[in-house]
Structures are given as C-alpha cells and as structure tokens.
Image (tube, rainbow, N blue to C red; front, top):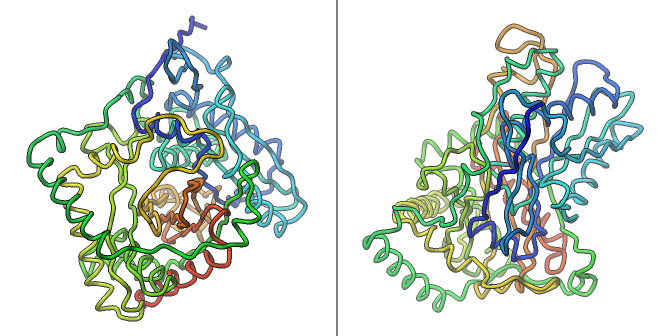
Length: 474
C-alpha cells in the first residue's frame, strides 16, 4: 500500500458556529430494511461495514476527525489514491443491538433513535456512527445513522444515507464493485470555504434589499409581537443539563395522500415547503391563542456558492418567515393565499441573498459554556427543514414487487425513513419539524427540547398538521 498523507481543511463560519454552540448537535436518519430472506446479524454487520468502507473513499469527512491544530479547529483525513486499499483508515463505529421479535425491533429502534439524538459523538474517533437493530427470526433490520452537525448538514447526510442503501442493496445482490452508483470522488479541501457569502449577496442591490427586509421585519416584530407555544412548567422542573432529552413524535402519510398533496401544491403553484410551513404556522397559532407566529426555514447555500451538491460540509442557513394570526386550518382558500405569500417571501429572500446576510446574526461570537442557553432574542415558534422529494425508484420500481427496473429480483425494501436534528436549547419553547418525501410517502418528525415543551403538546401539534395535510389532499 502506498504511503498515506493527512489532509486538512479549516472549518467554515457555520461549522465553527456549531462547534461554539457546544458541538453536541446530531443529525439522525432512521429507516427499516426488509430483506428478501433471513440473514444473520453477523452477515448484516459485515455487509454494512463493507458498504461504509467503500463510501469512505468517496466522502472524505467519513474518514476524518475533528482536531485542534496550530491554534485553529480543523478536519483531518487520510488522503487516498486509487490504488490505496481501505484497511488502515478509521472505522465508522457500528453498534449491533439484538432483539427477540419484530414488535421489540420497532420499539427498540425508536428508543435508540432518541438515544443517538441526545448522545454526543466522540470526534476523536469519528464524525458519525451507526446502529443496527437485528432479529434472528425476522427479515427486518432497523438502521440508524448519526452524523455530527458540525461536519455535515442534513442534505449531505441524507445523500450519504441514500448511497449506503444503494451499496447495501448491491452487497445483497453480490454485485461487483464497479456497478456502484456513487457520487464523484471528492477531496477534503473541496469543501474549504471559510466565507459563506455568495456573489448574490455581495452587491449593493442585495444590501439595500436586506436593509428593507430588516426594517419591515423589525416593524412587524414590534407590531405583531409573535408568540410561540406555551412553556411546560413540568418539563422545565424535571429537566437537567447533564442528561438532556428530546421529545420526538413521528407521522407519515400514505402514498395516495402524499401523491394528492404534491398534486395539490403543483396545481396551486406553491412548493411543498411553502405549504408545509403555512400549515404548521396555522396549527401553532391555533394552539397559542391565535397569535402571530415567526418561523425559520432551513435553506441550502450550495447552489449560489457554486459548490457541488455532493461536497461534504455544512452549507446551510435560515430565513425568517412571518405568519399572521390564524384563520383556522379548515379554510383551504386562506391556506393557499398564505402559502403563496410564504412562497414569494422565500423566493425573494433567496434571490437577494438574505439567507447569507442572516448568517451574521446566527453565529455566536464566542464558545458557549456547557449548560448555557443559546441566546436568541426572537420568539421563533418553529423551525422547518424540508428535504423535498427523494426516491429510490430507479432501483426498486415498487416496494410491493419482487423485481426492480432491471428485471432482477429486488433484495431490499426501505420503509419508515425519518430524520431529525438535536433540538437547540433556547430560552423560549419551540418545535423543530423535519420532513421528506421518500418513495411516495411523506414523513414528519416533530421534536423539541424536553426543557420547555411537553410530549403531549408536540403530539397534538403533529396531529393537527398531519390531519390538515391529509384533508387538503383529498
């Protein structure tokens, strides 16, 4: 094997921000695999590890650590040549949890999901980890990926998750390595952009637009005085910083409901993100006493930065959306009107680079001490991150058939694709909502820090949102 050299990359401002905020935020993707035949837990773990090792060649942060070097934090990874094997690179920690029944598998997967969300990653060992939940007498396998939010954003983490699924499917089919459908090879330094300011925002038009938007925003805040959800006294009393816990609730739509929802949005010329953020705002406003609501929407900065969608790293920001007091989630005409307003607001903020300007107000000036609250003056009711439509139908035309698009027997079925990000501890209660459409189903994850909001409130909001989306899809 050839001599391997270490490669370094400095952190960008968003990655440093996550580091300063405690370096304890994780991104979780969880799903259930159904194999075509019984497979031993040893074989499943072996194939999982082989798949991850192949992915480490293409995704440099999967073979990296986070270190403090020359008075600055850096990612460091081994630089590989095509001829190098992967025997000496770091192993991604894979934990195998064995259960006795399919019912126990579902319960254990949800429990492990919560554990991974709230347990810090040892960055001296790796920047991600994995959990397999197996059962000897079942073809189902629970899979959980946990990524460090200082090194990956959700879109990047999901691409790695999708690549793992493709690779694992090919392992089951005993496919040759050359048949891998994988992203282009990348170097660690491909993601080295200390500044996340785009040329879109680096002009006088963008600056003027931002100042106007900021002025309107301040006036609206003073006039509307937006409210978030009521704080739970019980949750606050039983919360400890040493054992932070997140409250989680999971929901999904049927394939028919999902298809109808997408068609409804297309017919009314609004994005699914705009419609979802409107429905969530109406639901929270209904719960908090019909008050105005302020929300945050996560956006990907890669397109305007000229960075490939495949490049590892954190390249996301937030835009703020203003929602007037509710008129009720049963009024479809009102929902459409407000969704179109949100759509225009989103497009305007992206066009004028306001998401880039917002970064300055999102980043802490210094590292926070453990247990400190993230200092946020704005009463944000909720955060929405929508990954949009993602599908594996090119490999598997239908989850209910036994053959794929190539006429070969399909060895794998993927279900229950949920994702979440460790909720930020802030001084005011808020909900974080993560959504994606995967293989014709819309999945929702509602989570919040257990310090401020009770699980019953999160579930109630989730029920209202899902029922509303299901209703307007009829």
